[in-house]
Amino acid sequence: MARIFCVANQKGGVGKTTTTVNLAAGLAKVGQRVLMVDLDPQGNATMGSGVDKRQLELSVYDVLLESATIAEALVKSEKCGYDVLGANRELAGAEVELVDVERREKRLKQALVLVADDYDFVLIDCPPSLSMLTLNGLCSAHGVIVPMQCEYFALEGLTDLVNTIKQVHANLNKDLAIIGLLRVMFDPRITLQQQVSEQLKSHFGDKVFNTVIPRNVRLAEAPSYGLPGVVFDPAAKGSQAFVEFAQEMVERLGKL
Image (cartoon, rainbow, N blue to C red; front, side, top):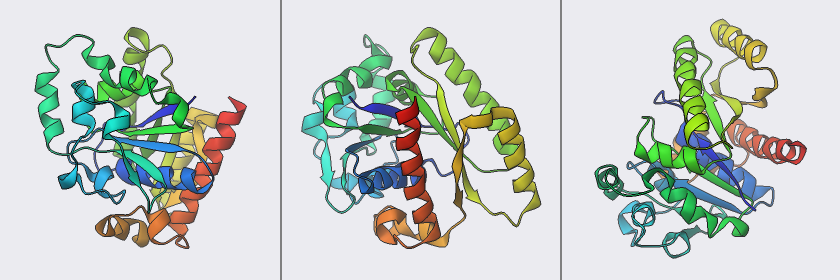
């Protein structure tokens, strides 16, 4: 049975998509069966997984509107080693079309039930805003992985996200919890980042993952080649950190 995780943060530009595709590739590298679901109309996680969003015949949009199943809509990313339920601009229309339908926030959850036995992990890349799409992701998930930079404004964004997760937990998904906080784009030379990192650890304790993802040029370059950094340059420090993170996730879930 797959463990389903949203990668979410209401603050934009914190590396959610980079985290999603690299964790997916890292998990695939350590022998896990992975489905990556792109819930962002920009389709960056789709493109970053070696799948051309413009060529998609079926996408997550069709799954949410129940005109296709996940098994019909998914694409295998041979280069990356995981399956992709892609997104493109069509998905922006789903927001409006889902407003009046029944079970609108549970559409993805019901679709995932049919493929849950085919995977060890399902990773959902959520848009930065709290929208019907994000809500579908949060209602489907067992937990949330929060990538965050160790900067002052990131702490403020985290408070908003924690409140959102509490509301979804109380009203829509009793399984939902924060699995952990992942420190990304980390530069140990910057004193403020070290201070915020210590604050996170003192406040959230073991909810902060041990793995730290360093600021890394190769990770930033990889999307322009349509690949996760883990596949594009496996020797890069950032790529190795994501494989370590994948191993930490597998170990952590073994203890849950």
